[in-house]
Length: 45
Image (cartoon, rainbow, N blue to C red; front, side):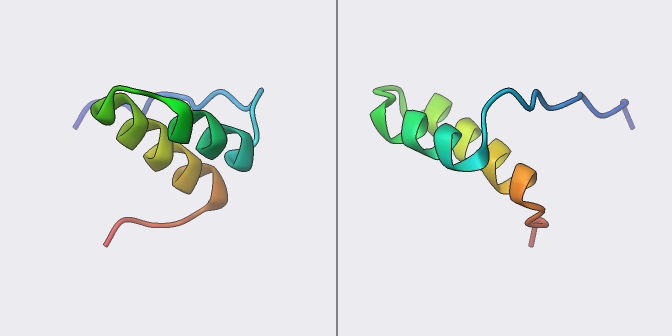
């Protein structure tokens, strides 16, 4: 399994969600939301 990539922490999870809502590309918005969840400590199902 490849090594995990570090997550930048210059934006808070709530700021990242706000940017994700404004993003026009669905795949990019989904990734941003997933990163926001990771910053909040939400685990995958």
